[in-house]
Image 1 (cartoon, rainbow, N blue to C red):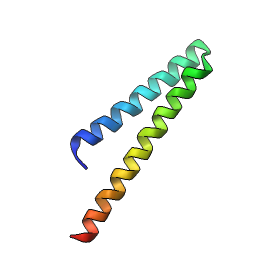
Image 2: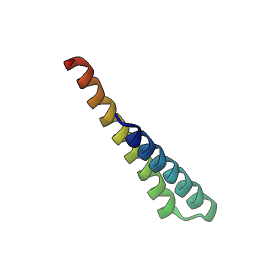
Image 3: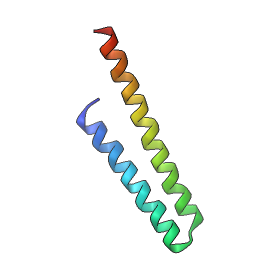
Image 4: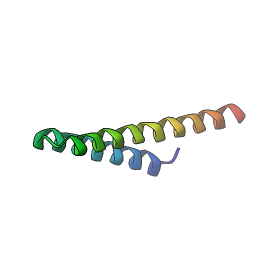
Length: 60
C-alpha cells in the first residue's frame, strides 16, 4: 500500500469523524450518519489495501 492510500484513508476517516461530531452537535441525524458512513468506507478501503498487501507478501 502506498503512502498516498494511507493518507487518503486517514483523511476520509478524519472527515467522517468531523461530520459525525458536527451532526451530533447540531442534532442533525443525516450529517451524523454520513460521517459514520465515511468512516466505514475508509475502514473498508484500508482492509482491502491490507489484504492486497498480504497477497503480495505471500506471492513473493
